[in-house]
Every structure is written in C-alpha cells, then in structure tokens.
Length: 122
Image (cartoon, rainbow, N blue to C red; front, top):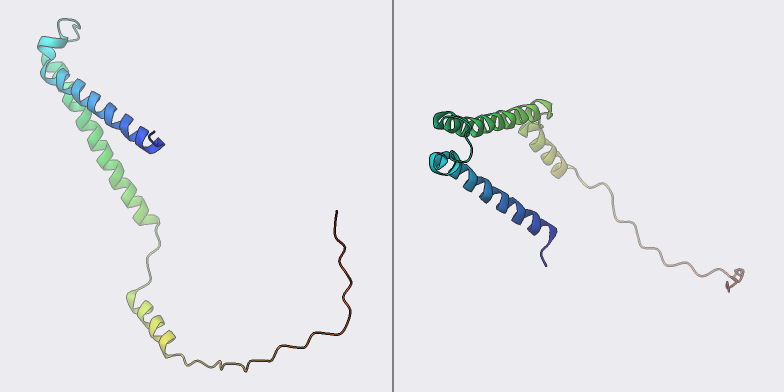
C-alpha cells in the first residue's frame, strides 16, 4: 500500500504527463489530428495561443517569485553585525566564574514525628 504522499506524487506525475502529451499533440499535430473534428480557427491562431499562454504563465510565476523574495527581504529585520556577535562571544569567554562550589551537606536524619497514615481507596 502506498502512502498519501506517494499517491499525491503519482497523481501529479500522471497529470503532468497527460498535459505534456496533449500540449505536444495540439502544437504539432493540430492540422492532422484536431482540425478535422474541431474547426476552432486557423493553425497559426491556435499555435500562437498554445505558445503565448504558457509563456505568460511562466512570466507571471517568475514575477510572483521575485515579488515574494522582495517582500520577504523588506519585512525581515536585519541580522546583528558580525562585530557585535564576536564581542559578545569574547565577553562570555573572559568573564571569570565567581560562583564557587558549595560544600556538600550530609543528608538530614529523618524526623521522629509520626506521619498520618494514608487511607487506601477501594
């Protein structure tokens, strides 16, 4: 049995292959395969739109990615300068340890007071 991710990946693969085959047939086999059944328009018109639409989608996708990168850069606070980070690291190394180890205390003797007995629940 395949996992959910594998099933989604297989579906994406299948859709991409089908779209690629349909696109290639529409682009190069329009005159012989499609035009006899569908009289949409001239071959030049169909081929123009078959190329123009994917180019437009790719162009808009590239612009979207560029806008996303720009928005991320504009809204992200700048990092600390390297000099500030190195001085903080050096200060931590140079700080002497002022805390000395406390002597270990012996465990206290148990008290002689009686503790109330706990009742068991049924």
